[in-house]
Length: 71
View 1: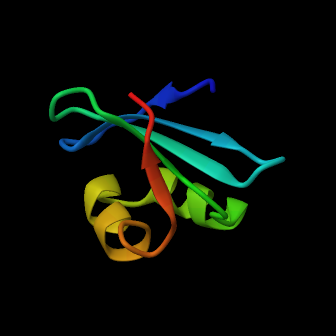
View 2: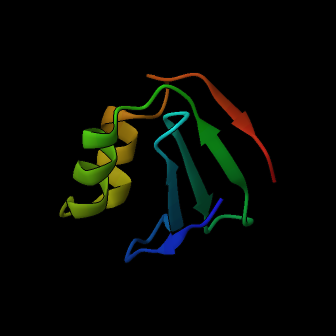
View 3: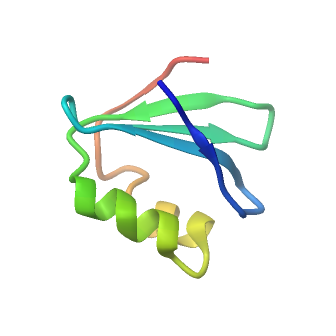
């Protein structure tokens, strides 16, 4: 999945596949890559434009969607 770098102390890059509603996040802490499933596309836009991407992720995505570590 193609990811784009973001300005965040916690997250290095974010990718999204609309056909499967899969969000992919690469974290700075150890470079782990996780996928989150059935994430609405509008939520991804909100994540990318949030004042604090990390805080938005923790409040609105983490533990809210099925997830799997892929890297």
